[in-house]
Image (cartoon, rainbow, N blue to C red; front, side):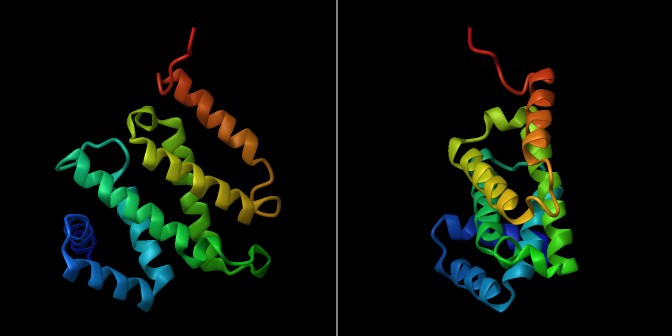
Length: 158
């Protein structure tokens, strides 16, 4: 799947294009884990820094769609006891992306609906990974938050 095509379809669908919405729905039904993989890849390439954004609203639409697609995908709905290498790899990549997002300064400037979606994905990932594949999620999240604080990612309230 072409990532630019995916991004354009999400932006068009968010602006009311029924044709793009139908295309995205068909892609999700055809290969839910494949579409989730592409969404994860798209987020990784675009990052949360916003350096490549054409507009904040467009990127937010793409990010929300991508995060929602990952949330509904089999990546976070499989039994981690199965040990499916593909899902384990994708969950590991998702974990790295989420922790990187939490540790960056951009989390505080994200719209609350996207920051909430990041939190939901993190909770679902912990549910899937703990304790077999992620024995210390709280320590890892705390370290990411501490790094964000060191980088100015959040401000202490006095």
